[in-house]
Image 1 (cartoon, one colour):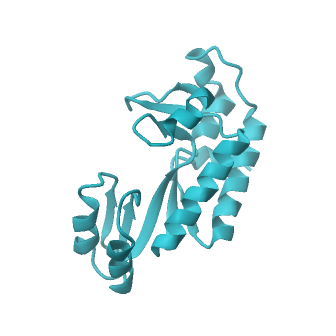
Image 2: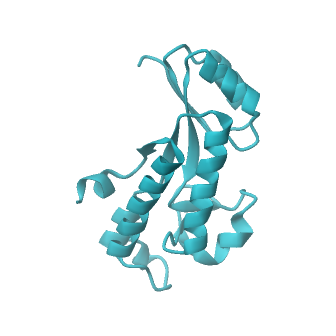
Length: 170
């Protein structure tokens, strides 16, 4: 695969989809992007993956207020983004709902971001920055694994990002 493009800036996604060549991979934030733009790229042979932030939540998202109390700690280097308590059942349902929305666009996979939450919890790096009681590393691992399988069950290929420890640990 010679043509790999990542684009999470909504205003640029349509042009990225047009520029990605046949058999290329476009990893995009599908939020606010028309199904026809995505379907057109898929019809040209582009492998389109939608973006899901599974381990963190950004304050710019429409759903942020629903989950702001599940924040664990600020995500260093990303203003307005916070590690999230993935053990919250509502968050898990939310991630699966996003996957269903992405599947409906015609995308074939998802880029499941911030699965490195498991490594941070396991190593207790977050604990240094936040006084809230943290879920156990085992619980986070089980939830992230269940989310991978739930998204696959929706009919999407899953590419975990930041999950080297998560993928290699068990």
